[in-house]
Length: 159
Image (cartoon, rainbow, N blue to C red; front, top):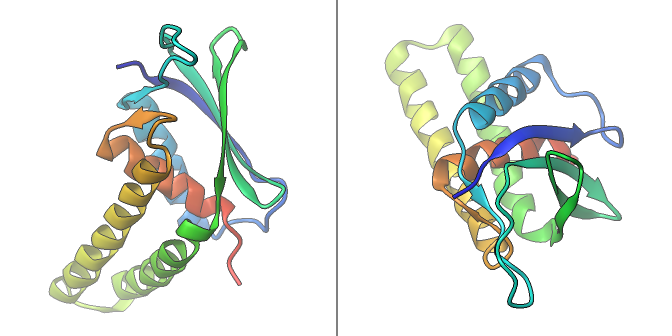
């Protein structure tokens, strides 16, 4: 399976992230570039593109867009996904993250661990949703899906 070597986030249309969410985004990008598994199937009977890939994530016309190019900027694929299936899990993820960030400041480790387990569970749910939505468009392992879900959370407006 091929991989992503660079990721670009077009967040120009959204409000600035909180410092905690910005840190999560930096960690997700670093971890994603270090270790990921991402492949695009061949189209119309053609061979699958080899990669490595550059991925741009953005929201365009109310849809989540994955713009995939080769490192030489040759267009490989572009996927447009409805935001609907992500909205509730992203909302839940933001709420549990806020609880976690608050807990770290004032609760004992045992209680923080319980909240962190719930946070990881919601994160896994978001990753599985992403894998399902990309089925037939791109193949990615669960760790790659988790890191991409973190980045998608930064793009979906809260409110």
